[in-house]
Amino acid sequence: MTNPESRFVHTHRIVPRPSREAMNALENAITRVNGDGDYIARLLTEALLAERPISDEPPLSGAEADVLVASGAFTREELTDISDKVRRGSLPAVVANTLVAHVYSSMSNDDVRGFLDLKAAELDHAVETRKLHAVEVAGMRRFPMWQFSLSSPGKLLPHLPEIIELVGTMNWISLAGLMSTKQSEMESFGAQSPVEWFRQGGEIGALKAILVRKSRTQT
Image (cartoon, rainbow, N blue to C red; front, side, top):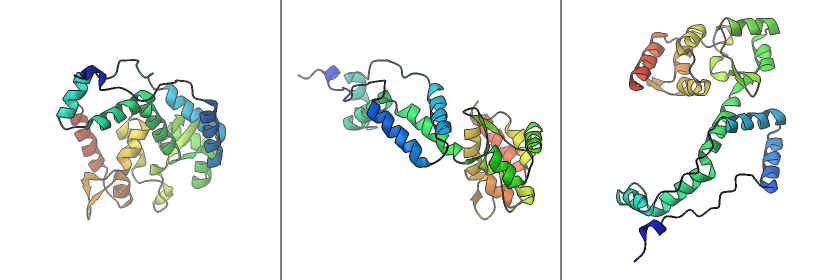
């Protein structure tokens, strides 16, 4: 009779240090983007350093795997595949990919100065007085693009200072997700995202209601 403990095994040997071949491939991929290579590399490095090391806990036992498979939530093959991916670092990799994707949805100091026709001191003042939303990524200041609007006065999303005040210290990636996601509290010919809502003249009270709802669900 087969021992259930032996039926759930990982198929990949974990090697923490990447091979030279893998590092060369990463270097080539960064170069292909044709951006600031050092900045992109630092960005990925900081994202991964911010992650907790993958624990060296033992994999699911055969009995534990049997319970999950019997529940119908996974096939044994799916469970093995998911467990292998987690142990190999898929979650930190997803986090790093998400960070890089959001950085590409942001603007640099020089970009914003040119877009808004501001001097360096004027841009600094706008950030200090919370009229613009800026974040620091890999030692460089970035401006998430959701706050800019060509069709709006000053090329800025209406109610921007109020939005910045309302969201407080919310993580900038979470905020970018919120601002681009359709919300039930914002309906004008169908649900709209906060960016769409404010560009079309929506009131700030709707965002207040969303943040109140989210705070209640988190408590």
